[in-house]
Length: 501
Image 1 (cartoon, rainbow, N blue to C red):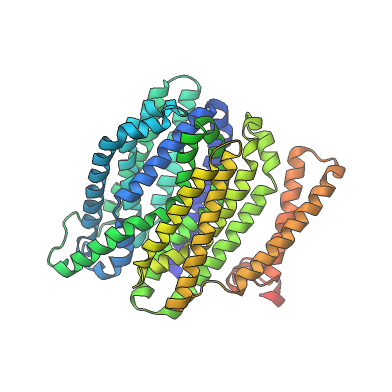
Image 2 (cartoon, rainbow, N blue to C red; image 1 turned 120 degrees about the vertical axis):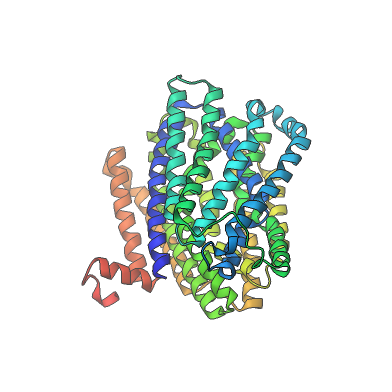
């Protein structure tokens, strides 16, 4: 757990540096220099590339994590890196072929409401390739217990390069064509930097150890990888939102949704670090069938993700009006306020219980993931089709994600409890939910009193955040929701709250 803690903290720091840059870029650069349609264009292109790349992986990322404990050893870990490069290349080739065949029908879907996308649709395969291997190389780093640099590359490097592109285009120093190429190129740069970092770490080789990887292992890994190709859709359900919105409501409304979703995405930032570093440990415990340890790890990850994600969503939401009042052209994006809450709740559900997906995928019951993913995908597509149109399109798209994820994790939670004896839900989560009910009431009370105090916009936000944030921290500490958090607080502030430490 020491390695998990260190790498999680470093990864979280990298993530939040990226969040800070992303906050500035999203709310003070994008909203000033790009139109709603241009914001929607970049969002649809990236989301399409991420969805296609997740399928082109052919389940490689899950396979790397699950089977690394078997491959670990020797100078190059028996060539698992070479295998992780080869399988996605096959998947990408299949995607490229499908793209050529279905390119025209896809263009027709967007031609009416999103004609700008048709002009740059040819760049989607290139962006897909970059996103594919950026993720593959990140996963290889995570099983080596090194996630900080890849997180810096993704969360900071890509954003800084994009910032340069936004400013150059905003000051009309480059054309829209050059801007889009630079935007896509940022992901290619990230891919190359991650590859260079892996070679610097060592223990990797493109040569696959065929003597170690016998026929039986190849068959087992192949079956698992192909099976996991379908299950990756679970983590990509939000991508359907922008794709449906772009086709049914146009790129301008997709741009409004994009700004709102940038805010909501902050909620799940901690899970990107803790999830990446905890999966190999959970995989190792599942391999040993140490279900008591799996339960302990799962409950710990779930509880702390719930604590952090709900706290972040709460602090964001109580300051949304201030944020929209401060950003350039904020009146054009304020319609996304309810999207932040709905999509933020979906992020809370996903980040808090995604550990259930990890446990099932690493277990002997991994084949059941297919049934749950099929139901989740069907719900997401059906709900988006029904709700992502009309005047309430952006709220409908966010609601589709929340409903689909909630139903999915209820089914998954029950499966783990019945068949593996693993229950990741405990009293800590229940107490955290109760705390948040109290905090919502506290915000409503403060909201009624605040206008009478006559404070300015910024001063009111500072006082509101400090007061309600301190109340939330005190409730978490004195409620002893997490003994681990209380221990950390006691070490940071020696002698503080001795009765509760």
